[in-house]
Length: 464
RNA sequence: GGCGACGUGGUGAAGUGGUUCAACACGGAGGUCUGCAAAACCUCUAUUCAGCGGUUCGAAUCCGCUCGUCGCCUCCA
Image 1 (tube, rainbow, N blue to C red):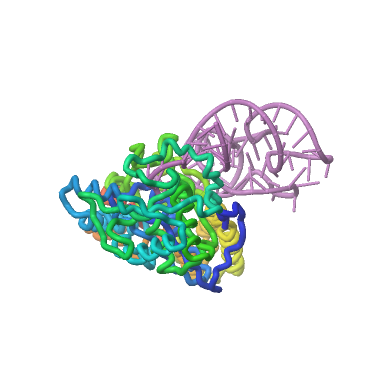
Image 2 (image 1 turned 90 degrees about the vertical axis):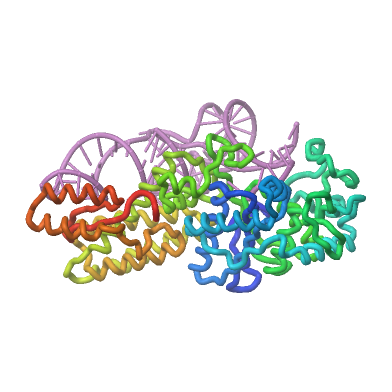
């Protein structure tokens, strides 16, 4: 894996053999996440799925930021509490994540429920002289006290354009580049009483406190988008290591941006798409997952209608093969070289993902197998048992990819009767009726194809 | 102004010194199969890897310069 801090690509060696601890920066629940956010979550999902598929135990923590300026503002505007607002959008996040087949993190800690560990962390920083208190009760991290500051982002603190980042209300800071750990009480803002006085936590401190609470002072992998490298992750390192004296994270993984219209997809720019809106517009969730996942994580993706169409076509190609294998029946001996073929595909798949999660090469291995299997289906060169073996093999790989149709995918109401009627019409060579029934099924989203194994169907378009 | 990433066919994209290295996917053209269709398969679709110069027996792959695109330095996945 390629570590942002060292800039090196090196083997992942978990602190505890066989157990990988991963922390991912999650959503701020002040509104629906956009698909650019989900790109980074799905990249972490791929990582987690792959490590587990490889037999490693994984503990995956993803934070939920449920208190910040935007949530406070949003709640005030909506005339509700920050709790209610966060609940609402966290629910939406979960729905979107499920639709995209994202693995549920083992723990989804919410910031407002971890005030105590944050306060304790800040107190330690105060005691060690890495933080200081200002007149309004806020507490800042003193960058000058941490010489390694800037190492992750390869930034020289002296070179920052400091003039542009001074916030109007932050008088009293010792240095304008120091960042807030704890924000003093203000009218109209939620306040927590804590061992360091009243106030609310700053953003960076929540990830440090919660990651260390669940994963320990040192853990293996921390993920996020490249835009979090500075200052968010830089600050996390500084305050965590200043507090514990231990190395915070073994490997930093950052995924590149999803772009739309040549620019990074971002709420502030307005060039965003949201998951439910795309699904409501008829986009297939699996195609969307494929589009967000099929490019290497350190490579920017340009999101376009064409990219989504191409992803849909690639997924349909897999669907067609699965349908063909499920329908396939041929009474003949098992193919002698099948296990060798599958073994080779698996070897290529593993080699690709072992290499810094090279998903493109892994998919290439899958599609090479797809072509070969299609060839053999056309040649009737497989036994019925072979077809089952291949299906099992593909479903096993799909524990990593999660793009195949559900095994339980079911027909829409009424489709069964239409299929039976069409089968009967075909038996009596009534082509007109057969074609009419095929059209009817198409309007239900069921594609019917005629093969030597009889007619077979698959669900097309939106939905699953 | 500082720091960094990237530039491969019609499109997306792997490949980071030689041996089928120009994968794979999408799209396009032709063909096979089929009652028709769909799917699938076969053939073709980059003598070339932004441009220029250099290193080398040999470079898309290393070095330098130029041009271009994007990102971070501010909330941000």
